[in-house]
Image 1 (cartoon, rainbow, N blue to C red):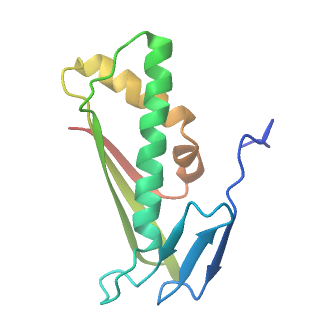
Image 2: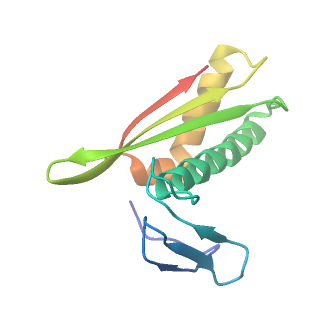
Image 3: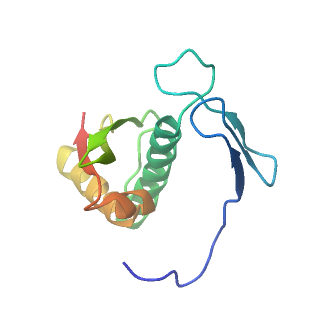
Length: 139
């Protein structure tokens, strides 16, 4: 993995406390989120939910880019269901993830090429490759 050729965007947040009653706010004011532990009684979200949302959103954008290069139209009802697991691993914690991608009406071979291409360029996919157990499935 190389260095950035050019910085296109920098996200800036200020986070306090962590999973239990923590908060995170972006410096531009567009994000203001409360945290609570997964499965706990709190009303906040958790980092795994945010990661699933961020990765699936980014992956859709990568598929759009690949589709444009392939001159393929993506269906308006395409969707990704992302699941991110958190669990103990080798004295610490680790993540596992599944992306279930729905591309209704797209031929299987074309859908596979779209997903493979998106997986190659999506920064979340690139960051997790070799570090997180990932399954990407067309549904």
